[in-house]
Amino acid sequence: MPPSSKRLIQDIRRLEERLRCHWARQAPPLSHHLRGYRQDWLKTFEVPMREATASELTSALLAADPVLVGDFHSLRRPRRSLGTLVRNMPEGESPALLLELLPAHFQATAKEVLNDPKYQLVNGRPARDVYESPLRAAAKRNGIVVGAWIDASPQKRDLAAAKQWSQLRLSKPNYRWLLFFGNWHLADSHLPESIRNVGGNPAVLHQSPEPIWEKAGHPKKEQLIRLGAGHWAWLHTPPLAQWASELQDAPQDDSELCAEIAEEMVDSLASGFAECLGLPAPQQPPSVWPADQWPAFWSTLPNRERLAFSEETAPLQMVLHPHLPAIWTPANPLLNSLVEAGGHCLLTEHPLSQQTSPEARLLARAFRRVWARFLNPFLRETSLSEIGSRLFPESKADWNLGWDSILKAWEDRQMPFLEPQQRVLAYEYFGGLFGASLVQNGNLDHQILKEILDGEWMGFNWPTLVATMRAA
Image (cartoon, rainbow, N blue to C red):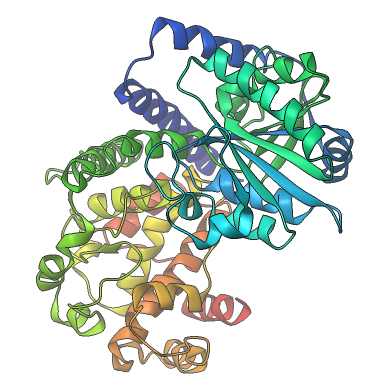
């Protein structure tokens, strides 16, 4: 890797650390009591650690009774990972999920919870929406779901959950128990110790704990880490994603307040990217439009975008105004969307955003994806058909069948003559692939990114890009 590319990566890492500190300061302060509870959790990671294999973790989980899995309540990914654990259980075993956020002593089959919205968590959200992935996996194995929440201090909730589990495993001995609790409950002196005190032999799986992020050297792929006795970590989400979700979680029912919070985060990202490149911070602040403002946002789009989208049916993913720092989002934006929005806001103050050629539109999309790839090394590209169904949910088109015509248009340089939806989809999908390839080849540096912004980059190789698309 050239020295200039290494300097860019170092600057982005410093930016990531600054953003984490800045966003952490925006979160509500912890009480003295909770600070101590969190400190116990931090001590869990003050041990020697090493990279582990999937087979090692699997063996440890199979030998445990029960398995404790960490949750970061405002993120979806930990719940999807719990679903993966359930799906990977040995054939013939039925799971029992003890969920922190369901009221204590609630009990039903996973199938019942999955099929009925009346079962709600203590925060008012339907359990089937929040825990869809593990519930589907458990329902296929005739699993059950039990609640653990009591209105008490975290320590008392640990003791109550341990006692509840000890009683349940006697009355329901034919289940494999998985306890899904917030990260801090998994400090060794908290829930694990309470479980051991009632005769359990827990294995503890922490999901992407922030203290390990830097110790692991900002991993570029998912990793399993072996910690102290009985403790493991699964790294699959950058800490910045946790803070982004945490800040937007509290005011979930106030769409305008959520939009304001998102605007502040997008602004800090755009300013950070500018500083990283030695450029002035964007002068025009971002504008985040919540879901119910789609018709108004649609009306601001240039004609070529309005023809692609429907005023009546909103997309299921973020849409950016091609020339303005305006962002519409169907829900609270996750880290990847926030980062791309930040890159977009920086882009709108530079010449590339005013260019309308296929090369310029694709480069603009690639520029946004570059930042998302740098700040989330676990990010993977979405399929053409999934992007199509999310951008145009009212369409009956099979986007995979349109692949040949889209690709041929690229090869023949006939992009302007594609149907409006195909054109938008091509920029979104192929631009994302191009941005990912720019990061993966390891030659990006500050100068290249500035040349892209100014529309002066001469490294655009059309035959190579088309070959990349065909390979994808």
